[in-house]
Amino acid sequence: MIFRHRVKEYRLNKKWSQKQLAQHVNVSRQTIISIESYRYNPSLELGMKLAFVLEVPIDQLFYFDFV
Image 1: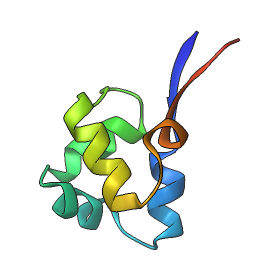
Image 2: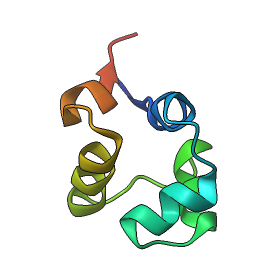
Image 3: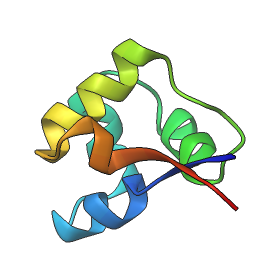
Image 4: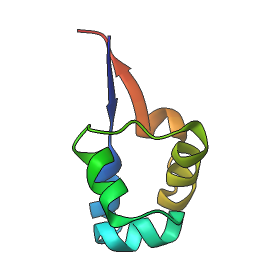
């Protein structure tokens, strides 16, 4: 079971830069870079903020891949 997400995909759909997304959820651009490159798993609170600003249900943004 592998933790996956579609943060970058939904961010690009909104035509936002990493900096713009970071500003919307009140984190640094480096945090968004780390999330998108799977170096950091966001907290539940940050995950919910991301889902809210990207206008996507959290279970579509974050999911487990059963390999």
